[in-house]
Structures are given as structure tokens and as C-alpha cells.
Image 1: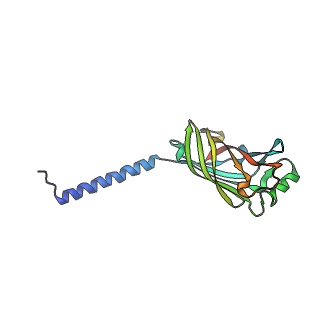
Image 2: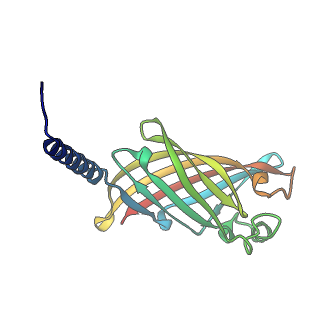
Length: 199
């Protein structure tokens, strides 16, 4: 019969436990992430909405965001973004003034809209469905972005860059924005193109 003393067993458990902790530490150290901050000069946040039988395009001139990327497993990454609603620009001053007012973005009361990712699902190579919380006019709803990673690599003056594009469609009525219906469509197509710089 194999006999193991209490002291020997206690020592073995201690050694095994330390080994597991050390292995976990090594794995954690290898799971490195990189933070990339959006370069507004080389990025865009645009939208399209139906007006009667055609579509009107616009953009937001002021926005910021960051991607915390795990390049070995992008589905473990995170996105956080903020857009200034008052920076809406449809190339028509009177319309932009109306969009900033209470009928639409109510920019004075709700100056920011935000997106915070919650989960990433890989669809195919470099393409993901990113689900997150989107907040507009004080209302938060889940939104799914169709996101594509365009790559990572060197830029000018030693900068390390990443490129991304994303699309989604929301219903503005979900966020209490119903003015102009039915002349102005409910569905808003959003397209985002991002160049981000590693910090």
C-alpha cells in the first residue's frame, strides 16, 4: 500500500498550487492588448436617411474613440467612442440648425452620443459582429456593428496604425426622434471609417 505522510501531501499541494499560479501568470502576460486612439483627421462618421424618395447624407465633424485590441484574438477586443451631436453637418446650414434642436438631436441637452462594445463575434477572416450599448438622447439600446479590420502596420514618422470600417442601421424612433415622419425615414444608415494610432 502506498503511504504518503500528511507533511509530504501538504508540500506537494503547495508546489502544485504555485505551479498553477505561475502558469496563469505566464498566460496572462502573453495575452497582451494594444490601445489605438482614433485619428479624427483621417477618420469619418457618416450617415444616410431617406427623405421622401431619395437619401440625404451627413456627417459628424467631432468625435473621439479608442480600440483596445488583442491582435491574437480580436474577438477579445473593446471599442469605446463618443460623438458630438452638435457637430452634425449635412452641408445645409438651416437643416443643420434644425437637427441640433429639440426635434432631433437636442444637442444642448444631449451633447454626446456614445458606443461601448460588449461582445465581438467573428463572422469570417477580419470581419466581426460587435454588439454594444449605443446611447442617444439619453436612451441606451443594443446596436450591432458589422466591423472589418483593415490591418495593422507602420505609418508616418514611426507611428503604428490600425484601420477599421463599420456599418450599422438604427431606427431613430427607438431614441425618441420621430420629428419629420413620414417624409424623413425612420431608418438611419451609419458608416464609420477609422484610422487609429497606437499609444
